[in-house]
Image 1 (cartoon, rainbow over the protein chains, first blue to last red):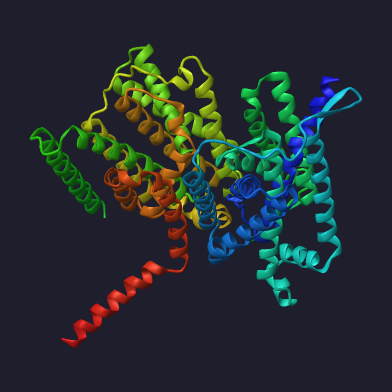
Image 2 (image 1 turned 135 degrees about the vertical axis):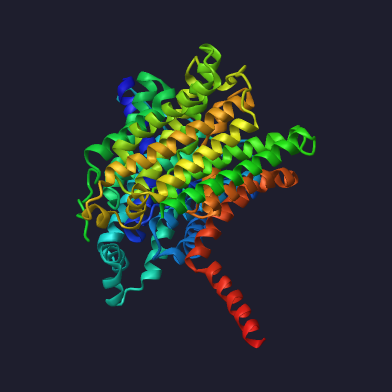
Length: 291
Length: 314
């Protein structure tokens, strides 16, 4: 059952994309900006986990928690330093700053760790399960479970808690939310923290699936996850989840049935197609332009 | 008004001629050695790149991260024409630029209907696709690189290209079309309501920008004598963007000066070359935040006030 194996492989890569795409989508929903540096935050997450386990010799659960906390902090700090001063300026200025932040993190890690790949610690046994004849590695199983759990918890948080309500209010209308007594700054910081924390989990899944990490890993992962967010409808969390899974499966099929050289081209093809046919994405709302 | 324009044109022409003559004299008299004349040619190429990106990003207000992609199209097409078809240098340069322009239009038609953020990602994606294609084609010799390109680019062709680029872009910006392009940057909805065909002007500016990027690519190919796809990656696009941002978005003079400075300065800072990219990143962030906080105008106002006080004291 090669077909089933490919689908499950695709879903597990897609789960990783989905976690990153949720970060993009949440930040876009609240701050109306594309956080170009999100891919680099994932890279930082993978490196923190690598450092804590391989250098300090901590167990897996500690390094995962430190990595999530570190990324969340990094996300909040970048927002405070780089994006907050530009909150009311043109989208071009914000975009250029975000590119600058992304470039800064990437090159900082290049200088600190060099461009050579590091071996990511093996948190999971490398064997695989056989389900209905399909071979599934433990890592892909874990990736799928983690994605499901994280998305579920996040949806509960957004829809059921008071803080989640505040987030939805800010994404709807920043000014009105502020008048209703919602602290917009805290809400934006929290969004960056949650998105970056999910990014850290994605970074760890990346490290476990490919077992090698380098400072460039965030760039391509970030772009693909962004495409997933656009495909699902930017601003929508379930959309990002579905988009990520679709991109993952499409990529797995291209690699196994066509050629691995074209996997990126197919993903970009999906982006161009969706932007032409349904720019709002699968789950997005059509926003009418107001004068 | 017309007379003034002609006077201005003649004046700029004379200034360009004087600069060209002085540099040519310095080169032939041996004041500038081969190393420096090479840097001057690279400066010319960078000026063409920066001014052309400024048209799309500064005047039109659409951030593109695929300028290195257009450059690589121009570079490879012109190099292949020179090597395999023995075309004259000028012909292959122009055909390379036209090829980049056509690719620019093909990319622009579907994407320019969208908002800036999407355009940025699509052009970035396109840059990567072009690089992957160049890596996998036989005619480009893949990662090993295309060798044996006749090294025809000299300072004269570089300088001529700069002059033509600046002249064309300056004339467009100062014309009715330029005002239409700038109005799209300021408020797209309003300019569309005022009857400006925004889609047409977006694609026009994008195509011209791609054309000159292709020209710069052709110059680069015939200056280096060999091409590898790795040259034209994301980093190159960001480098060009840094030139434009540093010089000022929508400021041609600034782009020219920034491009020259950013070509010459790294030669002096070779010891710090690994920190160069880090510096670029800091420049991007700082430039945007300083602009938002009005740092430069405030400093200028302070100086102006001081001078004013000094004058009044006297």
